[in-house]
Image 1 (cartoon, helix red, strand yellow):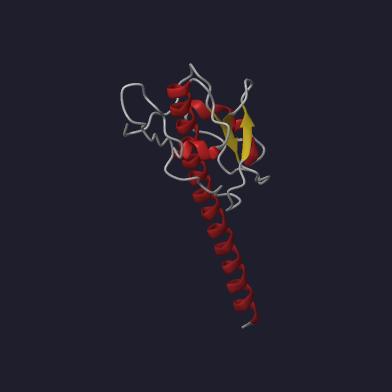
Image 2: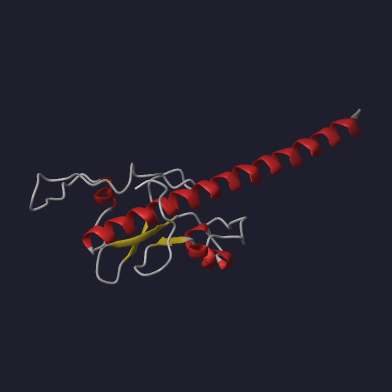
Amino acid sequence: MLALLVLIGLLLAAAGEVASKTAQREREAQLLWVGHEYRTAIGRYWARRRAYPQTLEELLGTAPLGTASSAPVLVRYLRQLYRDPMTNAADWVLVPAPSGGIMGVSSRSKRAPLKTGNFDPDDQAFASASTYGDWQFVFQPGTFHRRPLLP
């Protein structure tokens, strides 16, 4: 009976480890998706204004963009400010642009990533990252970037 209890305990521990790794992989996938959303939004902002946003809130389109021939147009570059899936908080590290503003975001998490390969072309540097914080989702003009499905 004691051996059976030990075996059950070992099996439960193994199942817990598998569940933990599965949850971490799901958070990684969410981090990649959210990071790409921020990178794309910053790219759209830059394409329209030829400048980087000063805050992430500017990506929400709270300030109207005036045009000479018509009324001001509200331009939204991002639907909402997303939480960092690894920390479950909106505590992104902001990557500053050389000329001012924000050119990207990265996680504050110091955990080691499980994913180490098969990244998108823009994310190839992530393969050598030692923490999720090393995954920097940065927009740089003139480079390939994932395009949104809808305009």
